[in-house]
Picture: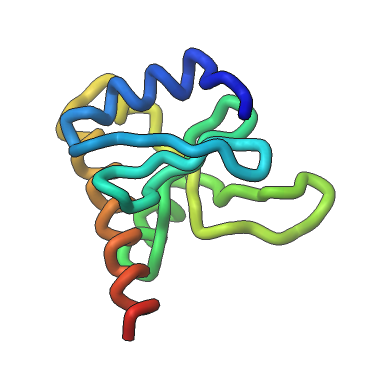
Amino acid sequence: MPVKDRFVEFCIEQFAPLGLIDSRYMFGGWCLYCDGAVFALIADGALFLKGDGYNIPEFESRGLQPFRPFSDKPGTMKYFQAPPEIFEDVDALRHWCGGAIAASLRSRKKKKS
């Protein structure tokens, strides 16, 4: 497994107020978990937050792009670029990352049903 780079370590540290933050290397990038719920991806030095029907419109209204796992293919995933202010403003961090964590928890409930 690759060693965590500085950006992954930085994100883990920044998100610590949200809960227990853990990471796992998968498919060439890193998944970030908060209390066991995957809420973010780090790929190619960029952070993407989990989206669903509740928070995707907010990402889209800000022009934040979805994650494309393969640059040569059109498909995207329901993870969106994180707005830069989450690293400067704790309220923005709680809002955007909290929304991503909530999306992850809603996704878990759907799978259990």
